[in-house]
Length: 376
Image (tube, rainbow, N blue to C red; front, side):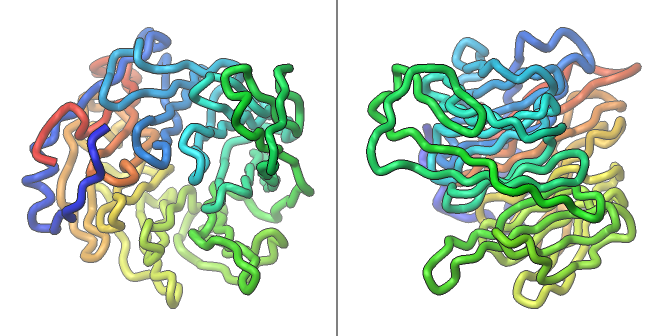
């Protein structure tokens, strides 16, 4: 894997440098034609050596970004319905969590392909967030219920070889020397409004500051800032005139980006919780995902509506709000971009495309700008 990029790109140089990067396509054999294999969710592992994709056809795959051939990837099997969200443990680069409308959350060891924990969350799960210290997971169900999961690693190995069970973990023979973590479902927290997405603050709990902050978007156009684990609402941001669908905290912690059904991304200063600016793609459409570059300077949004990706994926400079580059997409005029994810330490950008309906130019799938070569 190439080392992390050390030099930061200035806004004025971004288009020239990033525009010289090549886009690599990753073909999944599960993709049999337009609309058959919509990738809904993407996640890089903490080192950026792997990227996970979760699809509507329940395909869950781990890719090596520098080797696009499917033979270098790993398929993780177990979910019985579409994958809605994947996220890597921030402190364990081979531990992945996934949630599905099959009502389960599964935790995987991607090295051994083993499902180390299967948790039944009692309903269709579609959002998932992992705390910065890797000790807390929060699952969101489609009935607007948030469910915390406690993650604990024992001090000594817990050697088991049986199948995973609800609320507990197990290990494969390939990982017997690694202490197994335990995953415990805690008391659920029904929400009084439509709740669409969550993310944790970057805070690491300490004796003097034991609580975390959890952000949650709502269908009323607001974002709730809650104390975790109590789920008490500390503050409410009245962010958009219609539903807030997605959010992401900048790696620097300076801004919270909120994507709405009004086609806007609003950027909020986390020191005073004032909206500093909004950005919007020329393609319009509801913003169902947002992602920050590793340096917190650049941002882009995902929109799965037909036409949102037809003229490219627009990248914005966060500090000025200017559009600095548009990634050419190949999905055709009816293409959508369901998911985007910047690399954790390089100016590499992963995104997925759909290609439904007349004028589509292929089956869509995973694309990554950067690994195939260029000036970055």
